[in-house]
Structure formats: C-alpha cells, structure tokens
Image 1 (cartoon, rainbow, N blue to C red):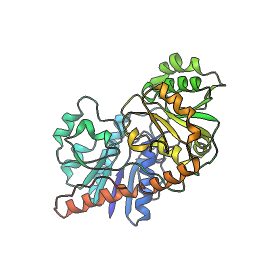
Image 2: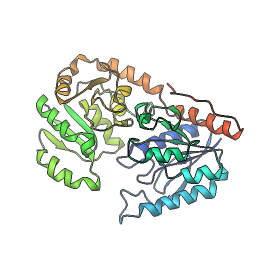
Image 3: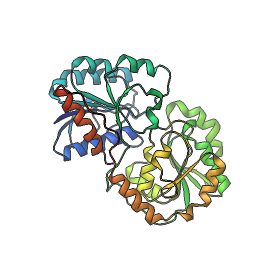
Length: 354
C-alpha cells in the first residue's frame, strides 16, 4: 500500500535528543518499509528515514535557531499533505487534531494515533464534530476521557528488538529520564532518592517554559553528588545510562498516555518504580518488570525491594513482551481501516495487538 505518515514538526524523525512521538514514528515507518509498503514521511527536513521523506520545514522547531513560527510550519505541513493526498491509499497522522478538518473533507482514508493526554477542556467538543474520524489510543487509560470518540483499538508502543541490550548487573544509582516539569515528578524523584540513601542521576529535557520552575524548585537541590543533572541524552548515551541504573523512577503526577521511557528501561534490564497513574498499570508487570506504587513512601520501600527481582528473568520477560508489541502491530490495525474504507465497507473494531 501507499501510506503517508504525518509527523509533528517539534522534533526531527527520529529526534536528536528528547521526543517520544517522533521516535515511535521513525520505528513505524521503518517497519512499514520492511514489510514492502511504499511510505512517505511528512516531517522536518533534518529527519532520516527508510521511507520517502517529504520535507515540509527545513529543521525541527524546538532546536532550531532562530526560532520559527510553529503556526506557519504547521500550515506548510497541512498544505503539503493536501497537495499529495491522492498519492496515498491511507494517511496515518500523529499531529493530534490539526488535520481533522482537512482530511475529513478530502475523502482519503485516514487514521489518527493520539499520543498526548485527552482530559483537557474542549476536546470532547472537538470529537463531537468529527464522529467518523477513526482514532487509535496508546493505552486504554488514555482514551477514558473521550469514550465517545471513534476508537478503533489500543496499541501499546513497542520498540525494535535490537535497539537496547539488557544488563544483568544490579545498578548503582536511580535514574530519572524525561521532561523537567512538575507533572513528571522530578521533585518526588529527588525526595525518594534521598530517603532511600541512593544517588539520583537526572537525564532530562528542560522546556523553555519551565526555566523558572527549574531555577526555584530543582536547581537548589542538585548538589552534583547525590543528585546529579546530566542533561538530555541521545540514543547512544541512553543505553548505558539506563542499563547502569538500579531502577528508573517514574513518579508522575498526570495521566501519562504511555511513557516510552518505561519500556526503554525494561529493555535494558532495568526495573521501573512508578506511581499508579495513567498507563502505568498497563505497562509494568508488577513484581517482574518493576513496582507500581501509590506514593513516595511506597516508592522508597520498593527501592529496598529491588534485589528481590531477578534481572535476567525480567529481561527475558520484557523482550518477549516487546516483541509482541512491535509497531508493525499499528500497521496491522491501520491497514484494515484504510483498505476497507477504500472498498466502501465498515471497518471492524480491533482492540490491541499483542
């Protein structure tokens, strides 16, 4: 099939540093190409892909200097898709809601994978205006606020089988990997590490709008010894960072849609200690790949229980699970929707792909 993939423009595909959505899109395009499909990726010009790249903006927006106008970049993206829409059998979008008015009127079969939180005000009003638009969630929990949307299934993220190598050591520090925002829980991670008497290494992105939060709430606690700030890490540095940790701390304070870093840590053989919110109970196999906890006190107790986990058994279990979640599964969910709509038949609901 001829398939278009529409990626966000905030990061390149794959991203240079932080960027879960763009990383998943990169894996998905490669999987589609390996299965013999003709794939066109609409993304920033500094992207790399095994498919056909249609560059719609010279560079990814977040790291480009001088800063570009995001609205102008998104306008260019939608216009590029509109000009070529007849070249494709199905269009798969990863840009939230922006494409819905356009693709709903152009008549092309399309699918939207939602990557963000869906409990924000006004989203239910948007969904009601596009009752026939098909959506895929990345966790069952993600879709709960918009139960009336036209959900075609949940497909948990996977990752390439050879991307990470599992480590069987016990690890010497606790890791935090993500955005330095209050909802991601960096302050909780610091308190957990201090209470557990362990070093915390923080490899994180600092969003432009969070500099005050960092200066006032986080920087005073980073002493360079017990609490260390490493900064953003690329894919090459992520493997040793996660593999060398005793556990990944994931003390979120928001309805996490998926949490790609959890399965990245698991693929490195590293257990995850996460707060019970959003997708967490769907991703962690309690007592095998980590612990799901309700507060900081339970997280500290979980740190002390890490030696109960068999790291080799955990790595084997994780690799088996992730093999069942390869993003080719998203293809098997997307293509029936596209092909059946092309033939004028009603697509059948399909939940999961494990």
